[in-house]
Length: 131
Image (cartoon, rainbow, N blue to C red; front, side):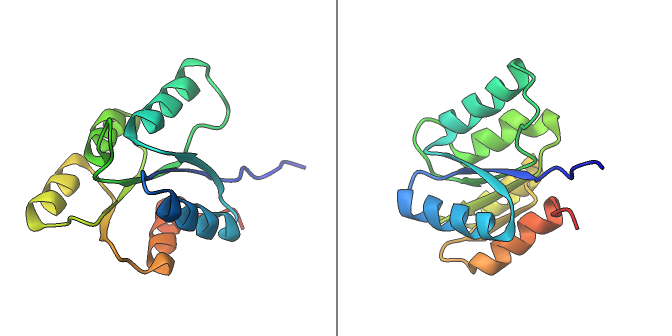
């Protein structure tokens, strides 16, 4: 009998409370969640997974746009060639930022405050849970 792989989500958010809320909601749905406190930590995690050929790199990334070290847009640009779905969240959304995110390949951008159920639905569309 083959075990179904639990999808992994990397949540990169510098606001500890927001990161905890998003991570908890995704864990409740059944996702394995890794938390990163900023964009550089997120990119380091992905690089480490690839460098060490770990079996559990993230299947989808949820990242805040404004973070120290690297922004969510920088994270998106850095994983673009890996074809990982990236969902961005921001408290500073404007038309230019949304257009740039789409151009860089973001699945979607949620403006804070957002409906956590809608974010979870977007993650599930990008990376469905096994049935």
